[in-house]
Amino acid sequence: MRRFSWLIGLGLILAGCGGGAAPASSAAPAPAAAAKPSAAISAAAAGQLTKLKVLLGSQSWYQGYAPFAVAQEMGYYKDAGVDPDLITCCGSTDVTKQIAAGQGDIGAPSPEPIIIGRQPDTGMKARYFYTAYRENIYGLAVTQGSPINKLPDLKGKIIGVNNLGSGAVVAGKALLKTAGLDPDKDATFVAIGEGVQAATAIQQKRVDALSLWDAFYAELEGFGIKFQMLDNSAIAKYPSNGLLVRDADAASKGKAFAGFGRALAQGTAFALENPEAAAKIMWKQHPDTKPANKPDTQALEEAVAVVKSRFHVWRIDNRATRKWGWNEESDYANFEDFMQQQGLIKVKVPVTDLFTNDLSTDINNFDETKVREQAKTWKG
Image (cartoon, rainbow, N blue to C red):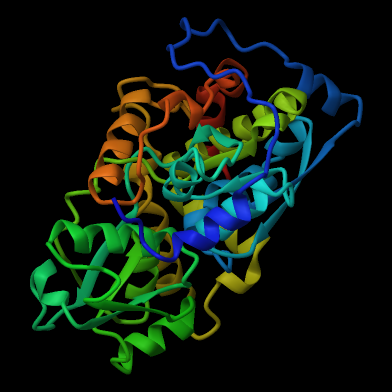
């Protein structure tokens, strides 16, 4: 079964990126006891912070990353004994390449390049330890009023993505295949950037459709653009971005990774409880995310809308396993099935090669009620 031509480069770069396999676990842990100080917290108390290079899967900060900013503002990283350097750099495919090559400690890509990278002929040795988005964030859309109403209408069209290394490219091509189209011949994917650059490309009608993600669409609506989503149901149930590490590092840096995951979980719980506070914290941590040409009331309303657009993927109260960052084995098994059906992979690998849940107990070792109370009472 033929894979898309762009995957060849991924295979060449990832081939030979080794490291010993980390133990993988998929069984749900027993209910956690009352939170107790972890080794990472003890290290923080002693002033010893582990530095981590963390690669995020987009080119710039935006409100969809609010939990990362909240964790910084509220001191959750420091409490966990870590000092992360959070870098917005590139798309999910490039983040995966860099982590596999040892050019970062943690990456936050979508699963597609990881599943592809674990193919036997590629040999990548990296896996998730934390699923951040429990549902898919990607989807194809057109602007309201477009004559394109269904996926087959995209034949011969130009589809805009933020960059050609984005997981949105893989998702968009897979959706085209479900409609019987050849994504390498029947449509053209072009990079339109992010923020104002992307909005301008759409408003000037340089693209016919878009393959982006939930929070990006919500952000673009702040530019007065209205969207009509196409049928994205084929991928809607599959997980999206998580925290990726090299197998060889999963054991040696496990405490630091768990600490980072715990801080992100706290930041996520905070954002779910008080999205307005989370949006304001993002502005404080990254002032360039606040529009300079809009009244504060309007800007805040739009920022909160972007944060809320992520609620459906952040929530854990409606999941089979109600653990922050939990990697659900059936979700990834089903995703592998889909990718094989669409020709993205030749064979299915053992699903536990894609993730480990060994750090879950440490990740979930915090008082969520306390975090939510902090969110409720936050004053800035």
